[in-house]
Image 1 (cartoon, one colour):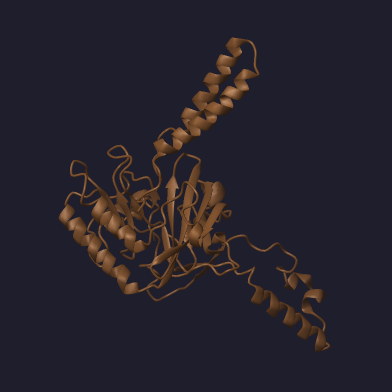
Image 2 (cartoon, rainbow, N blue to C red):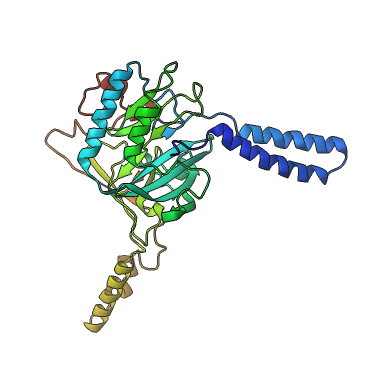
Length: 357
């Protein structure tokens, strides 16, 4: 069973081999010799720069960095992991989708989209986006993100055919990886472990400076939803500065009094198109004019290009307490990772992550 995606060093060796081939072809066509040598050196420097070590910006992204809480008591960490696993088992989801994120450079972020039905992975897809708000967007500041680019999509017996991306593991297997290949090995190094707000596993691994090729397990977003036959992966994915969020899930941060949920894109649903056609036919048969023909502004979606990814649905709710307990968490990287799973308390949480009014 493959436990983790290839290391950055392995990826860079493959890039360097390709770059060397291109460099040789270009240099052969150039004269004089000094110019050819200079171009070769510049291209090699560019390739090495592209392979330079980059740390993940947030703890919900791989590779493992110091933003993921350090484990000093492995016995306690194993107990916490088991408590988190029990929270996962209580959900009893028979099918679900999760995403793993990996930042391999300052510019690019990789996502592996994994669909599980029963106890087997039935789909794996590989997507990329720029690792900044220019493509991810920033919901809190009103910046709308773009759909991540889909490079390939595997289903059924094709799963595992492509190189790259995270391995095709279930969430149960991720818990096993964390227990057996992180928290129970490499006694000379301190592992890192974090949990989401709901207590489920978020990140488990070693710093790459301690062990670059060691196993790692992470879940950036998880939801009890799977794509319909007409849906692409992006139809279930909202974007935000912290990466991707699956449909039916809330954003990482929110304003006070705000209730926000990622809504799947169903624009390609054939049943939806059929219902629209039937409604149009009914309107014509009733003898009443179509409101969309009378006032096109009343039907802004008509004629518009369908959305290419999921979208946020947000509204504000006022209560007697003035939303004192629903104000958003400060967007510090450390605030995205909890050292202990719920319902266990984390005394350092309020100190590290103050809530804004």
